[in-house]
Amino acid sequence: MKLFHSPASPYVRKVVVLLHELEKTEAVALETITTTAFASDEALKAANPLGRIPALERAEGATLYDSRVITSYLNDLFGGTLYPQGSGRWETLTLEATGDGIMDSAVSMSYEKRLRPEAEQSDAWVEAQWSKISRALSVLNTRWMSHLSGPLTMAHISVGCALSYLDFRHGPRNWRQGNEALAAWHQAFDSRPSMQASRPPDA
Ligand SMILES: N[C@@H](CCC(=O)N[C@@H](CS)C(=O)NCC(=O)O)C(=O)O
Image 1 (spheres, rainbow, N blue to C red):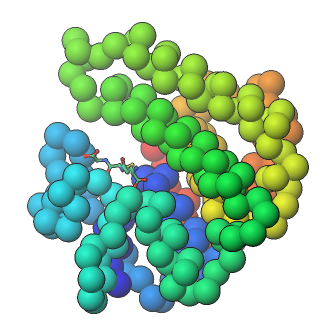
Image 2 (cartoon, rainbow, N blue to C red; image 1 turned 180 degrees about the vertical axis):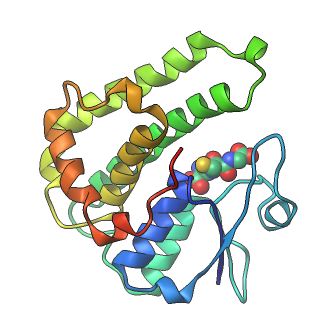
């Protein structure tokens, strides 16, 4: 299998962290590409018409995207337990969606500042995205800590990758302020070998 990959993408990082956690890194070759919404990589467009990473090319069957489809597929394929089926299933999926949603807003903020011409950038848009992230962080910090303290699931991986992306691209926002329990959780999560092995390059 081949994974369209960029080390800076938090969505790709979720897949890479899963592969490390399941000790299956050798099963997937990383095809590192450079792609943006304005200049999509040609091979990626052929694999995923939306031109987004991650996309997982398989020997047989459709190329899979987006990240949640890929992580569910790989977890099933390798007999992982990252998506519990019994009690806690819907909480896990909602927590995973919260991590992914933080990424959506954080990536959108990065694109606004890094990709759009300065005259077209909207500070109001950026602040609206940060409001979503702030609310989500506060809810994680107050309502989800017991779930985050439980056995490893894809929800932990999504939230962990989202928080690390905030450090990577939005460090000056200081997301830890007022979210001390979440910050302590992230410090421990970020020291996992799977997170250490998937660090993005310096910004
Ligand atoms: N919901 C998608 C989001 C993927 C996504 O937006 N990836 C970004 C990289 S961080 C991308 O490929 N951007 C290029 C583009 O939007 O054209 C997922 O979970 O896979």
